[in-house]
Amino acid sequence: MTKEEIRAAIIDILNDIAPDEDTSTIQDDVSLRDQLGLDSMDFLDIVMELRKRHNVEVPSPDYPQLATMDSCLEYLHPKMG
Image (tube, rainbow, N blue to C red; front, side, top):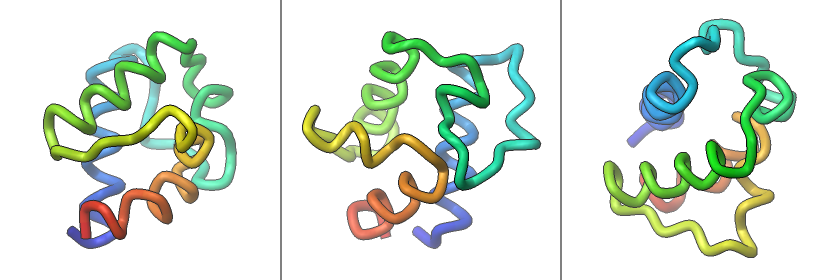
C-alpha cells in the first residue's frame, strides 16, 4: 500500500470509531486524540481494527508511534507497504 492508501485506511477506521468527528480536516502533525477527542478505548479500537482489517499487529510499546497521522504513516508503511 502507498502512504495515501494507508492514510485512507486509517481515516476509514477513524470514521467508524468516531462517526461524529470531521476527519476531513485532520492535521497530519497534531495528535489524533486531541483532534478527534479520542479516549484510550477508542485508541485500542484503532489498534484492533488495524489487526482485523489489515492483519497488522501493533504491540503496546509501539502505541506512541500512532499518535499523529504522520507518525502512523511512518510506522505503518513498512508493515502495510
